[in-house]
Length: 458
Image 1 (cartoon, rainbow, N blue to C red):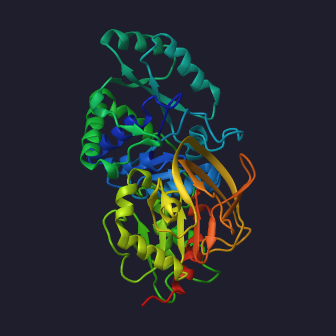
Image 2: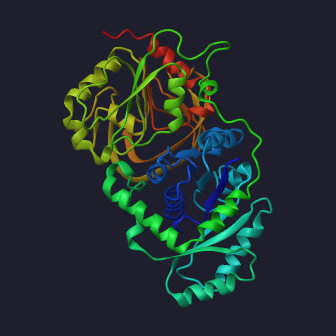
Image 3: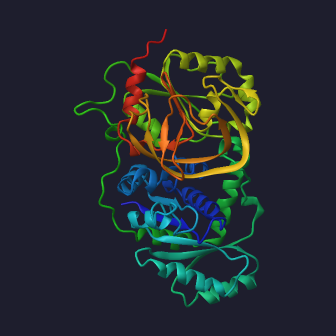
């Protein structure tokens, strides 16, 4: 059994990421094997979690993956660990729009039978904190709020007033954190700046978060709370079974294709399970950096370009003309290319006027409008990623516009918030704004690997 805590808050901006990452680093510093998790689709926070623990940060998204996969995916990620820390999303009870509790931190906590620690921004309140905590603790009897961490506390006097108010709430105070600029992480248009873009500064910030948590939190009390979680009676998720091999098949039969996966500072958005699924499907996964590498990995017969921030590195990506030509050549050859969001922009003709790979007859530009939300999607066309008619759930999150937004053969038909087609399928290319989680769609990784096996590279 893995001891576990869910770190939640009444709303966004209360300090969940700072507290969760600090706890992860503080417990890892004590010699515990800590498994980091994040509720929802966010890619950036798990990067800080991985830095704090030395293990991959993993997402638990009940909308994209389904409620039935939350506990198995958790057990897979936490296998062999002493403690798991799960950072929530938004406010504790906030979930997918018009879907009740679906994909909320509260729902994930219930699925994991995990106690919740509520992080409260106490900067503008004193006695009212007790009413707030009481409301959150009593709203859903199935959600067990086992403690509170008070964040952004101003003075000793302020702390005294807060503790006094909470004394009769029945919810113990397990930490008090003062305002501390050193623990702050810079943000921009899509949230925090990823670890890959500020390595040294990120290391310093995580160390400061760990020190703040060690000084201000009752680590023994938090660990005891985590160990009070009951056993989960589920089988861990398996990449081999999740790869979706045909009945009786196993990954690795036939040629072992090389699938290149974009990484580096411009392409930081990926789920750890995707590489595991591709490897289980028999592929060799090799990471390359489009900012630095002038050629694709030797023998590449398939390409995965996930999300990230190409708009921040447009000049550098454009200047790497040898790699742009190599990507275009691979796409023209019919080899499978799966691109999501940032990958879609990279395959376009241009991004903010700078030449990109030119695989797609479309141009991208930054926009002031944020596109954000879960999506129900159906594959409109056959591609190496999905057969026509395949239903998947995904997530859009970008401040860019692509014109046109869909090719002659679109990738997806979306049902919300409005009905529209989106993305491009041409040859072996599947390019779209939609982020998907392949663990929710057995067969995706196998299908992609099988198409890559058919490619004959010189």
